[in-house]
Length: 392
Image 1: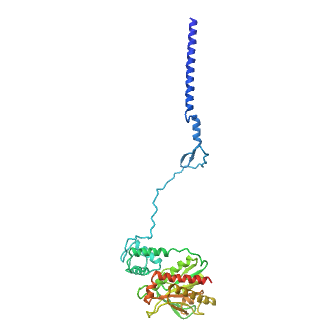
Image 2 (image 1 turned 180 degrees about the vertical axis):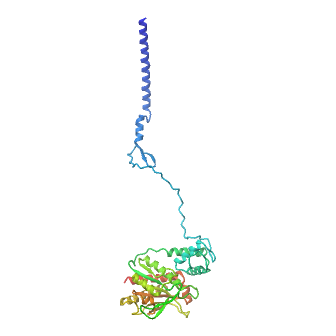
């Protein structure tokens, strides 16, 4: 029957449309619910926003907040970065050796070598730095202990080592001072040397009279300290102080084991074109009561120069240095002596003088000259004298 068939078709069509309408309504409801939820932006837009704030860096991917304009990071080739393991900083110490040990004759090793080198730097004479604690090192330790007024047993215990390290650090550090001697060149000769050279040389250029090239000097009758060691200790201290004031310092020697004749010392100063130079010596005499400080200067017409100003400047330098050093030490004034018997004077072309800082044959001065305190007083006087001389 045709009419019934058509009615059925119409009923089916209405049912399909109703179901489609319901389904569409549900879809719209779902979309509205999702859109109303926080952060419910379109997925593709969210992905776009995230990708816009991801910047490649050499060490990975850095996500930058979108609330400001990110700084553009240049693209580089990826590299492997090795991060070193952190290490603790070494603890500074005041001594390069173990302060708790005691060293004596017969010991050996790196610590002994360090002790020897420190003593050498300070002008003492421990012998060859070989790491062996022998008789010469023992004598040098005793010398140092007298220098610091310690018990002079020749054993390097913690107290002796502590003083040694502190003095070595002080000696090897140039203090910073006002450069009042800037542009000045001063020569320093530590008189004598460890081994005397008894071969001879002319006392002056072209002279037929000869003198030995260099002696080892005298020694302390009570301390047994060697003059050449004391001379070098004072000379090294003086060098440091003058350099701190800006002076250029020329040394004839900075160790004891050298072989330099007296004429060579003068020639060394001539070649360096020093403004002036001083020789540092001590004295000795058969009279144990004789004491005091004195100056020697070149006698007129004995020097290797025709410039009369050199003699006048030598006299002026001598007077200034002596007066200043007498003031700093309160030593007895033995005045100034003019001589023509010293090759060091006779070969010199520049102003020169020699200071004899005291008598090692006198008990009082022998025990003073080996000490740090008295040596410092001598150096202070000489420094003040140089400052006065060059301020004129």
